[in-house]
Image (cartoon, rainbow, N blue to C red):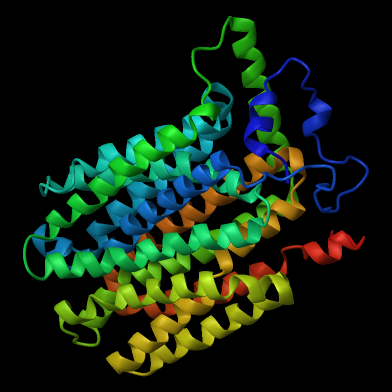
Amino acid sequence: MAAIATADIELAADSTSTNDLRPDPSSNTTRVAATSAITPFDLTFSVKLKLASAILCFFNAGINDGSLGALLPYILRHYTLTTSQIAFCYLAAFFGWLVAALLNSHARLRIGDGGLIVAGAALQFVAQLFRFWSPPFGLFALTFGIVALGQGTQEPSANTFVSGVKGSHRWLGAVHGCYALGGLCGPLIATAIASHGNWATFYYVPTGIGALNLALCGYAFRDQIVWGKVSGDQSATRQSKTALRELSATVKQKSVWQLSIFFFLYLGACITAGGWVVEFLVVVRDGDLASVGYVAAAFNGGTALGRFVLAEPTYRWGEKRMLTIYGIASVALELVFWLVPNIVVNAVMVCIMGFVLGPFFATGISVGSKIIPTELQASGLAMIFVMAQAGGAGFPALTGIISGRVGVQALQPMLVALLSLMVISWLFVPNPRKLASGSTIA
């Protein structure tokens, strides 16, 4: 894979032509990206430092995202909200990711991948500063949009960098495993704090981690920041046209949309499960809030374990085959969770479901780096990533709105539908191994 971060900036050069970004006009098929002539990043000290920064970036996001499920019952009761009203937090996050999707291509040409990564870290840190003092709910909900905008600018660029490192499938597994590890730590810490005091004091934790994230990525990616304004109106116009050509070529790629739909459903299912499972167990299963708050940690703990343990066998035995098996297993586990009204059984099913869903994200990104043309990988993977997070914000919000009308028991049919559609969508994603052997998929 290419040294993508450098290639992105070079797209703004005068020598860039429209044909460089245009899909093959002679075929409507999806072809494997030509990467044989591209040298992946070697593990120099600078690359290792960037990998460490990417790991902290995703761990920080996991702490933030994973904690909401455990805190949600406390937030509902503190602000005296209905489940429909809490959906505003998820809706704010959705719009944050949407804005990031619209601005990323142009912003990358202006400030570089390094600039995006640092700006994203700064936005997340600033948002956390408004949380730990229990602000009015309107401001609290707004912080979710700011965090999402920060994640939407930082994480796609970090993701793209990691996909260009030698042995990327392992590093992607490690990076996204650390996201799930953050998702495990978040609800554990949040439940421990909220059950013994003010729930909002938990946010001192992501504030501190966010400060460290900002400092580390600012140092590690300083060589990939484009400083200063664009010189001259002509240069600015050229960069805008380049960004538009890149975006236009990206949205014409069938493989980008196939993966985007898959990730939209996948992350929607995962964050809906992690975000609403505690409230479901409290309201529907009559669980004790101080105890069942840890079930969200069980889901994220299973996800973390799956990302670390299953990355290598998934790669060796075939991404297409293994993710199909995992997906079918997740539907079966969710059905057991729904139909067996026992909290212990439910907690075990949630943990195992997290385990089998664990390798999906890193594997999907790795597949994307193989089936998306090299010159479009940066924008293509960024679009996929943002679509995934949009699903992760939109479906939990929809679940909250429906729960406000029919009760939180709506979680279970929602999850069965999302997981089933996720499996179906994965079947339409091209198999990179067949493409590499010369086959094409229409």
